[in-house]
Image (cartoon, rainbow, N blue to C red; front, side, top):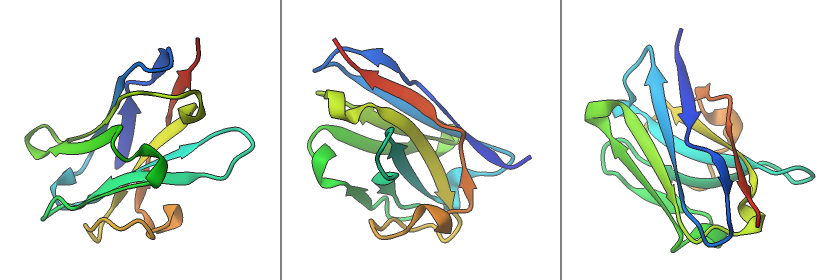
Length: 126
């Protein structure tokens, strides 16, 4: 079964950090662009970040620039999202998604990705 699986979510205080992981099962992430999305209650799903396959190009949504860092370790078939200086408004379910076309762009929609994970909850609260 081809899928991606997220992990690393949890409860953290404002100002804290979490690292989310995305691992592929059944295929190799090397040639896939990977996107991280989040969906908070009462809000639309939004793209947080992405990373390309070949050139490692990255994108960050404005509200997370300077706080979140996306990276990939192809040897481990993993992509990470390091989240620092977390704010209550970062609270959401975070999803990773794999794009077979391999590139990263902020305007590539959720529906255009090929594989999606089930999500991991991130809660930022004191």
